[in-house]
Structure formats: structure tokens, C-alpha cells
Image (cartoon, rainbow, N blue to C red; front, side, top):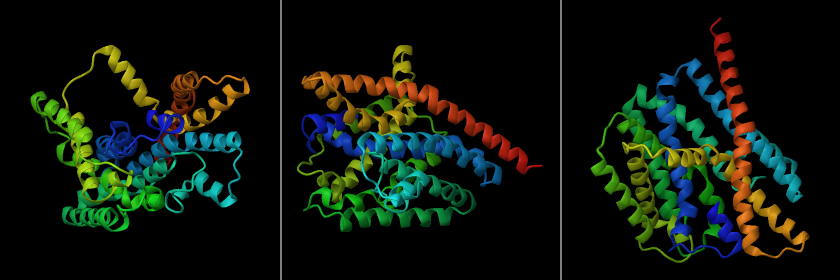
Length: 333
């Protein structure tokens, strides 16, 4: 959110800046954390996998993703009054844009949610292979790694701007390896206990490497060649270190960051809509205070995201649990 608001209202952060790097690799960390979290939560639930486990998994994922995606996609179309084709609308409302036209979304930024939907399809495959045949799982992982290297060194041309390769960059086959990296962190280290005197230096080392790694110029410098390998490794190390840190934040900080974590999906999809509305609303009242508009957008995005999570997302999450219980109980009769 901060990255986009600065980019839209001030100037695009450069690839040498912390904010510019966060704008690209914040999504990477999201993918890695998604892999860790799904393994942590669903590895035992899904089983080998089992029919009941898969029903619970896909039901929970559907009700977690689709209701909010539908709401904010429709809102984007209405508010921005953009003329999208019927095909684009169907692909977005069904989620099929994730495997076909992944860059063509109704809601700004929904491409990463489309990638996530593809990862949800890969996840049971990872579970099946890692539990049934470790050699096949290793071979499949190597194939995905080779795909990652092909995009990194062959598809993405470091001599050209990222804007010319945006569609190729968003390809799920160029991103799923990061999700797999998170899965492997969970797979190999779920029960591993690491003392604070190791995890804290690793976190600091990761952050320093992220900030000071020598890369500049167009954003393409961050997502191609050896630079991409370095930054992805840094993100994996940072995610692993935070995942294994054995400490609980003080209660006030725990509440603040826990709440931000809960509302992050709403915040991610909602903030472009808020950023579109408020500058126009301020201008309609002849208010030209740029900083006031920016701060208001920040505050309203967080507040509205909390409301959406509490009164829209959570009820659908509870409905998902009810539906999965109903489906699994019926299938066992």
C-alpha cells in the first residue's frame, strides 16, 4: 500500500531504494509465507491426500478468496467505469484469469491473487508427491526450478524495462517456485527449534542484505539475472528466520501487527480503489491539499479493511467451515 501510494502520488521509488525493493519483493514474501502457512495448516489435514481433506482444503480456500475478490472486482468496475469485455469479466469472476490472461484483471493488483489460485492447485500435488514418492517430488521440484531459471535468465531481458515484460513476469510458472520454497521451509523445518541467538542475527543479516545489495536502474534489475536469485534467496532466508523465531511480541504490538495481518487481504485489494476515489473527492470540494488526501487515503484504507474483514470476510470464512463440514459428513453417509 505504501509503495503504491508513493508511486501514484509522489514518484515511483527506484530499485536502489528500500521502498522500491519492497514493492517488488513484498509479493515474493507473500508467496513464500503462503507456502509455509499452507504446509503448516493443511499438511496433516489433507492426509495422503484424502477426499475429506481435499474437500476441506478447497472449500476453505474458495470462501477465503472468492467473496472478497468478487466484491472488490465489481466495485472497481462500477467506481472506475471502465469498459471491460465480457470475456474478461467471466475469467475474473470464475478465477480462470489465473491460468489464462493472468495480467487482465478487473481489480488492480489481483494478478497476485490469481497466482495464488494457481498455487492452490499445485499444493495438493506437492503433498501427494512428498508423501508418496520423494524421488518424484524432488524431480518435480527440479523441473519447477529450471522453469524459474529459464524465466530469470532467458525470458526477462535485463537491458529492457520491466513494463515490456510485465505479462511474462506475472506468469504463474515464473512465480510458483517461491511458493514451493515456502512449502519446503515448512516441510524440512516444521519441528526444528532454533535459538534466538541464531534467528535474530539471520533476520538482521537478511534485512541488511535486502537494503544494501547493489542493484539500481529500472525495476527489471531486481527481477532478472543473478540479482533475482540473490533477492529471492534473501527473502527465503528472512521468511525462514521469522517463521522459526521463538518469541512473542508485547501484547500491544501483537494486537497491532496481528490485526494488520488479518486485514491484509482486504487492504491489498481495497487500497487501489481508495486511492482512486479520494483525490477525486477532494478535488470535487476544491480541496487541493495533497498531503491531506494522501493521509486520509491511508487511514480510510486501514479502517475500511478492518470493517470488511470483520463483517464480510469472517462470516464467509465461517460459512466455508460449515459447508466443508456438511460436504464431508454427507460424503461419509
